[in-house]
Image (cartoon, rainbow, N blue to C red; front, side, top):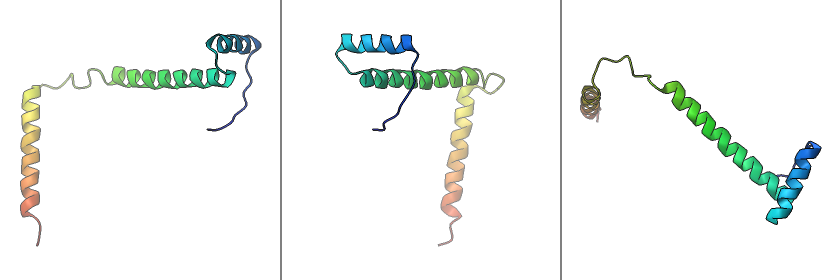
Amino acid sequence: MHRTQIYLPQEAYESLVELSQRQGITLAESIRRAVQIYLRQTHADALSQALETSFGAWGGRSEATEDLVKNMRQEWSERELRGRYNHSD
C-alpha cells in the first residue's frame, strides 16, 4: 500500500469524517473506498463508451452472419491444411 497526501475542500473533509464515524471506519478507509468506487465507475464508463462507439460497426455488410462464419471457418481450415503440408522436415 502506498501513502499519499491530498487536499480536500473543507465541506468534503467534514462529510467524509462524519461518514467514517457513522460507518465505524477510519477516514483513510473511507477515502480508499471512494477511490475504488471512482475507479470502477471510470472503467465501466470507458467500457460503455467503447461499446457505444462500436455499435453498428458491421451494419453496412451485405453478407449474412451465417455466411460470414462459414467463410471464416473455411479459410481457417485451408490455412491449417497449408500449414501442415508446407513444413520442410
